Each structure stands twice: as C-alpha cells, then as structure tokens.
Amino acid sequence: MNEAENISLAGKQMLNRRNFMRNTGFTLGGLGLAQLLQAENPTEFSGKAPIRPNIDPDNPYLPRQAHFDMPAKKVLVIFCPGAVSHVDTFDYKPALERLHGQKAPFIPEVTFEGPPGNIAKPFWEFKPRGESGKMTSELLPNLGELADEFCFIHSLHTQTSAHPQGENFMHTGFTMEGFPSFGAWATYALGSECSELPAFVAINDPRGLARSGKNNFGNGFLPAAFQGTDFNAKNPPANLGRPESYSSADDEKTIDLLKRLNSNHLERYPGDANLAARVASYELAGQMQMSVPEMMDLSKEPESIHKEYGTDTGTDLKKEYAKNCILARRLLEKGVRVVQLFNGSDPSGGNGITNWDSHSNIADTHAMQAEIMDQPTAALIRDMKRRGLLEDTLVVWCTEFGRMPFLQGNGTGRDHNPGAFTCFLAGAGVKRAHTFGSSDDFGFEAAEDHASVYDFNATILHLLGLDHERLTFYHNGLERRLTNVHGHVIHDVVA
Image (tube, one colour):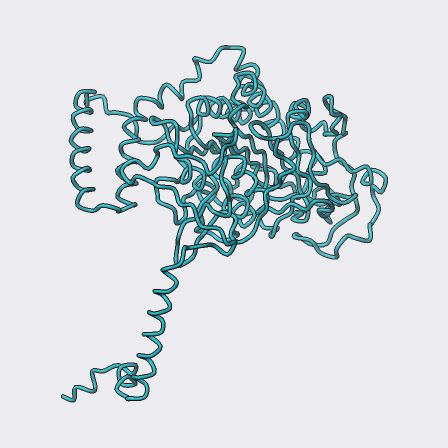
C-alpha cells in the first residue's frame, strides 16, 4: 500500500518545500507575537486593566470587595415583562391629549405588528404627586404616591423591538443567548454576605417564566455557581425536603461524608470551576434545608403586613404576587445580594393576559396587570424604607422597551416602541425625586440626554461600586463584560 495515500491534502501540501517554509515562518512569527503580547499588561479596548475577582473555587460565594465604595450593597430588580406603556404610566405627554385621534407626520407606515392607527391620549389621567409634583397616571396610584422616592429615566432606548431579544438585552447586555445576566455578574464580582441562602434569587411570577426564561437570570459563560436560583412564595426550591424515614442524624452523617469525598475530589482536580460549583451548590442546598422553610413561612408576618401588601384582597394572581413581594423583602433582610422579582410571564405569547404586552384592549389588559403589580410593589418599597433597607439596597424597576404613542390598526392597543421608554431607580446611592432625560413631545423617541440599555446597566453596576469597564471575564479570547464595548455611567442620577 502506498503510504502517501494516507496523507491528507493539507499534509501533501506541507511536503512541498516552498509551502513548508512559508507555513513554518507564519507559525514562528505568530508565536513570537503572542509572547510579546503576553508580556504586556492585559487591557481592554478602553485601555483599563481588567479587574477579575479573586474567587476561591471551594467557597465561590465568599463576600468580596467592590472596586470602590458606594452605599448600595444589595439590589432588588423588579422586572415587568411585555413592555409597560411609558406614555400611560410615568412619561406625561400633554401633546397626546391635544392631538388625540389625529394622524401625526412622524408615524411610520409600519411598526412591529403592522400599519398603525392614530395618536391616542393616555388611557388614564395623570396627576401631580408628592412634593416634587411629578406627573404620574392613575393606572399606578400607589407607586405614584412614592414618586418622591424615585429617580426616573425617561430617555431610555434599546436595540430591538422583539420580546426575547429585548429581555436578553436588558438583563445580559446582548440580544443573543448565552451571556451572563446582571445578577450573575454582580454575584461573580461581590459574592454574598449570606451563607445559608443563594447569593442570587429570581422570584418568578406566579404564572411562570418570562419569554427568555432562565436567560434572564442565567450564568452564561461565568462559573455555574453564579446563576440565579429561582423559586417563589408558591413554589419553594425543589428537592430540599427530607424523607420522613430519614432522620436528621442520618442527614448530618451523609452530609459529612459527602463533604469529605468532595474535598478529596477537589484536591485531585484543583481549579475545576464546574466541579467546585456543583460542590458549592450541594453544600448550599444543605444549608437551605434549614433556612428556606423558615424563610418561606410567611404566616409569621403580622396581619398588618399582609394587609399592606394585599395578600388577602384582589385576584388570586395579585395575592400570590404580593406574597412574592414579602418574600423578596425577607431575602434582602437576610443579606441575599441580588433579588430579581418578576411581574408577568410569557408561556404562550402573553398579549396582555400573562404580561404587559398590550397589542389590543390596553385599557383592560394594562389595568389587569396594574391591579396585580401596583399595591404589592409600592408596599414592598415603602416597607423597605421603613426598615432601613433602602440605605444599602438599590431598587431597579424596569421593562424591556416602551409602547407607541399611537394605536395599532385595531384601534385598541399600542405596539412595541424601542425608541423611548421609562424605568426608575430608588434607594442607596440614588437621587430622590429626580428626573433624568426626556423623550420627545409624543414619547416616540428619546430626545434629551439619551440613555442606552448599556448606560443603564453601567449605572447599576456603578451604584454597586463596580467599574463596568473593568469587571470582565476572559472567554473565547475576549475580555467579556456586561456592557460589551459600550456604556457610560449616568452620573446625574447618582446622589
């Protein structure tokens, strides 16, 4: 048999003297360049050296120092899937009332779901609130009463008008899947002050997951230890209960044995992040067997708290969401670093029934979502302030994009609007009774002090004492970060 027949085409080309010398030259040159680059200090495109947290694989949740000192040590993210209409809630536009029913020249021929209709005034009346006189609508009167606590950002805009990509972008900084969520970045950087509960908890809506599912609280390419643990007041963490035939002494002996076996295994495979994450997860599960039942027992809350949050009035969905809000406060009190509270789900498209995506009958569907969200969320923020939690906790209320100032062709709903939407911040490190940026007269596009989602996320990290340009993770040859290669801190919102 001719040995040359077993050689690949590329190998045969290497037998050519000229090709061999050329490829060898390229290879040696590449090795030399790599050595020169390695000798330099690693920097990002920004020119700043990355700050990668020093993580003990055996104890990935140990608390770590922030890059600089800021009041916020924890964060509560309240996310409303489906896109809340800013022009019907917090972004007052008198021009919509003046031009109601008219066809404005700025209206495009086609929006996300087809040809648009005419300009529509807000479906709810706006009134001045608090000492600041901030105009907010009657759709969310309880949150409106707290307007003096909030810092509104009215000039937000995003890259997409599709829900899955919009949720991904808001939570991970990328429209594609596979990137770490904000909560994962925060716990990767800071660890946790609480050893008996997860560092990052995602409290899903009683109706289920949002459109992007676990991407909204996933770890992406960060170590698995930093993904969010999802449960809510109705559905506690799975598989924590001990069988009745299994005593606590048996349980403790098993845990001790597993700890020794895991320790020995880690010594054989040091630096294995996935293995360390699994071990840490099992150890945390053991701690949670003791702490979670107490945490989930809301019956210990006084009747006045249940009444304030609304666990005994309204629809069943509102009652369950109210319980989730109480659970969120209890988790933050225990020192959980990131709590993400969802108000809305998207198991089958939503369209205003399971979330805020009101393409039709917005007067009914937005009202239904507001009945669920308004009282419990306002009670949560008010309760946090009363207990002093806002002194070291940042509150973020957000949605993936806004809605149009004109109706859809059906005449009853508003289409997706990536050009302008509103979110607000509150609590530690944030200016109170403040408004940043503005949309145009119609709420159609951001007008003054434009703020991208990158800027929004950069600001949240800054308020936690983290430099968004230096908090990185080396992945596939790139220094990855939450804000990609973009983003500027909105310093005007910082107290």
